[in-house]
Image (tube, rainbow, N blue to C red; front, top):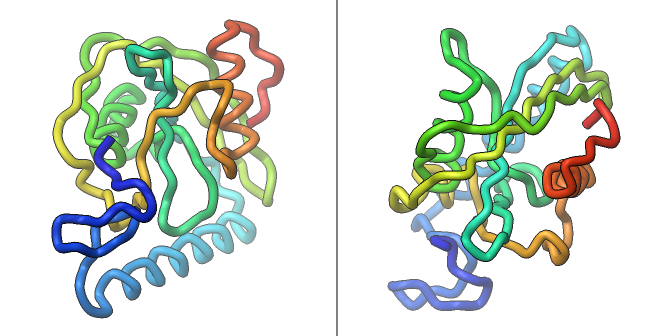
Length: 183
C-alpha cells in the first residue's frame, strides 16, 4: 500500500520500511509513544476505567485483510482505537481508518460483533465493524509516527506477529461464526 517493504530504498535512497525523519526527532517521538503506552497501562491497572474502542475489518478486491503495525507496541492489528467524547462508533471507525491507513470509509458499515477484554487488568470493550465500501484517501497521516507499516494480507497467510485477537476476529467475520465474547 503506502508503506515501503523492508529493504526497499525510499525516495532519498535510504532503506527502511517507514518514512524517515532526520535527526533525533523520530526516535524521540517513538520513545514518547512507548512511555505513554506504558503509562496508559499503569493507569488501567490502578483505576480500571471502562474503555470503548473500535476496530475496522477492511478487505480489498482480492479478499485480503488490511492490517497495521504500530511503532509503540509489537504485532499486527486491524486499524482502530478509542471512541472520543461526542463521537459515534461509526465516526470513530472512519477517523481511525483515515489516520492509521489513509482510507476513507464510504457508505454503511456492518457491525461484526462486540467483545470484552479483561486481560492485563483492563475493562476494555471493542466493537468490530466491517467496512465494505472504501477508497484510498492518500498517505496515512500517522504513518511513520504511530504506524510503522500498513498492508493487505490473505486471511490464510497473516503476517507473523498478528495478535491472537485479530486472527480470531478475522476468522469469525469471514466464517460468520462467533466463537466468544472475549477479545
